[in-house]
Image 1 (tube, helix red, strand yellow):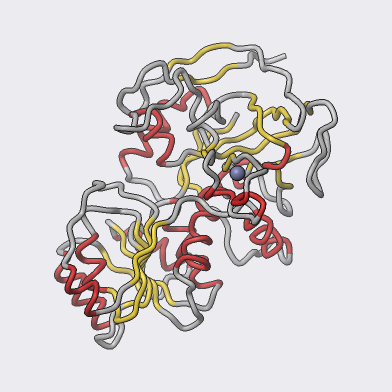
Image 2: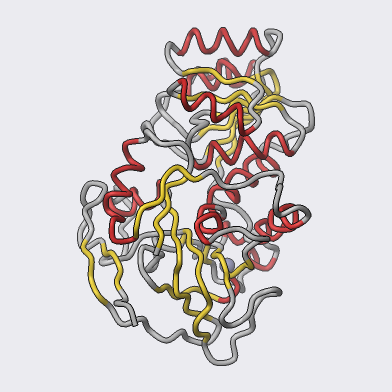
Length: 353
Ligand SMILES: [Zn+2]
């Protein structure tokens, strides 16, 4: 049997500062299962977990990694499996963990549970050959998708779906400005906007990324540069109206511009702050334009089943699919973290296991 190994954050440090160690995968407790992982995908959260978040102590040492796919190799006593999932079968993981018994969980708002957390952030995650997860977090892999595609799917599509459908309540015909169109969540958002009947204006950092955004279905692509020029371009593209929805995850560097380009009665939805977490804003713009600002973090686990059913209608030509930037071997996970942090790629960074 191949060596079981995992990466551990022993103490917080820059991206890629992890230790590799051999380990003996534990047996799952009742309600939980053990996967032999075949692929995992990186997210910004992997970097935040590694670097540490001021004011949010994390349990160290910890194995990062929120997204993963593999085969179901063991289950705890009496564990019940979700539909379409069987022992020995291929599965992907829903990354959110919650108590399952509180009022928020019972009404399906698991991401509002007081004990909500993400795999690889509050407990050991997928930068490993094996992982333990609750059976309720398993989903079948759609159609003929590879393990790499399955691993690259859940976190960013769940996040983008929650933001567009529930927080922004996007209506067909509306226009959405997607910052960071080349990121994992940005590339998911572009495709979902199109699938929901909206028009996506993607913002990217280079000509090469612009081409890929067109391919994903963005109606317009703006190469980021001078933000005043970008605002003027958005005005032109929207008949001076502005966009009904701004898809934010970039934070401090773009926040002011997000308010400027947002239409009257528009919505700004944010799930991140990659360029900085402290932003200022002109409150007159906020109230005079009657803008709504909504924060978003992950999404209802149930919605991954909705996304799955949309894919399974036509798995070979689904309305959206994960975009993979680069595939590393798991042994190069620290390097994959540094690649993600450099931000030069387009789509998801994946490790094959
Ligand atoms: Zn709960």
